[in-house]
Amino acid sequence: LMWRVQLESLQKKRWKSLAVVALIILFMYAGIYLIAFHLISDTMLSKELVVGNILLYTPIVLFLTGLLYGFFNGFSPSLLALVLLLYPVTIFFFKEWIILYQIVYTLCALIGNVIGALLFTQRKKMKKNP
Image (cartoon, rainbow, N blue to C red; front, side):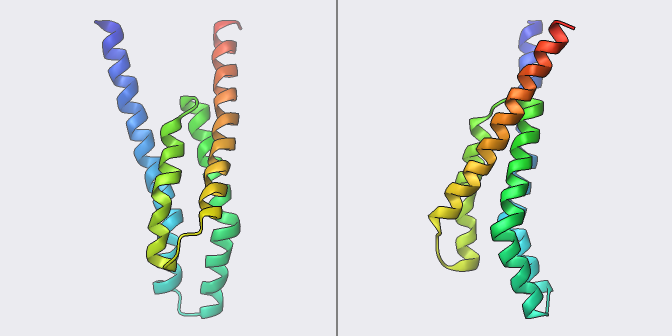
């Protein structure tokens, strides 16, 4: 019975973590563009924010999100599914689906998650064998 309670607690924690991850991903996929297109009146600054987000900010944030999630929770196919499946939200802003970015963003999250999961495993080993 005790292990079942612990498992349920762990599952709730992971779902909460994934909900936070989903919000971060949605902000990078949609929030930045809402800010750029509706809140910034300077068109040059708006374009810089959009291009910077596509080429730099989103890949870095997805890598770091994967890294941190992996460090605290281990490897997660669910995280990668979120990165992959939430990408079509960008169609609302660009009226097109650029599959290359979807693949690159998923790879950034995958690399971060794998590194984080390796660190997670190392950390668990160190706790068992100090």
